[in-house]
Length: 387
Image (cartoon, rainbow, N blue to C red; front, side):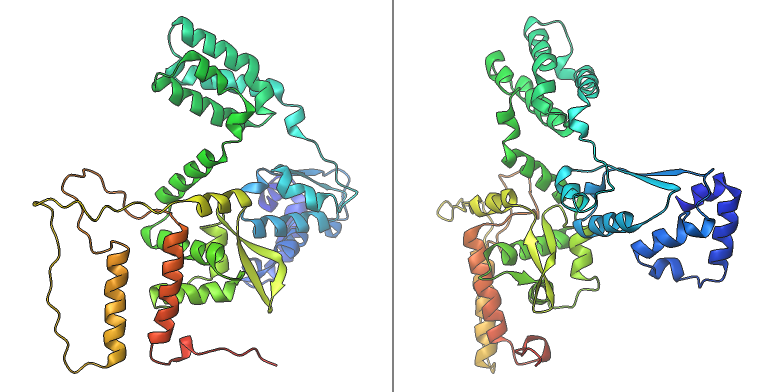
């Protein structure tokens, strides 16, 4: 943005060049967001020239991780200049709490003024969908109902439009009745959060690597089912128990950049000089708490199914090592990690985001035994708070 302003105004270019020329190459990289705005944008250093007014647009602030969005918003609110104006868009849940603190900020609820845009978007979605192509009377009636009712049901939210049209498209393809399909044009459909969460999980399963999914599952187990709120440091230790190595990337960065759609870091709540990690919202927590363990039928065997058979001999081994070995074997058998894929199955779901109460409690217990059975070492010794 600073470069764009400098290209449009020679005085700003000259001021910016003279200001940055004496700085070290790492200066901009190491500067905070709030200081960056003061350093780069036209401000009192350009004498607030009245012939230059810049409008900077920050669109979709709610798409940033919570921590970064809060930092940017606070920096913008603290910036003072008569030549710079800011236009910020984002979800009300993200912006309202901080914007209320400033009397100088004017707000517009876009949802109350975009009905025409919503109607155009609905028309565009209907034209682009193969489900609504043709002159069948049922399809024409459903399309007319959508165009009539959906603008009010959507309440100015484009995501609501997309969610309902996607549901209707699926219902048409599965040949549901016209009556059932038109019932989907309702606010009740939008309250089906479970479907939206499932879509989110499918999206993350596709974008995250297998190791990241395993780490996210481990974090969810501790955040949801642990006996206390977990801090960043405690969860870093939990991941060490999972991987047996110290991660290169900080957990805060990982949550913000990779897992921010499911987890969040409490910025305003400090526990023992550390931040707490929480589930993103109550709907997500309810979804995972209500999830059931997948049934594994161990009683049905077929002659052609592959199976494992082994004979174990133990010689000259310490008792603690034997205990640890059998605990690992038992854990793998409990969670079906040793099973071969069934030859009758043509698909393999692979690693996915899934957490349930039964497995979570077993895994938490397993991690505790891991610590107890380990030989004493620095990573697992008890830490006493410094006085």
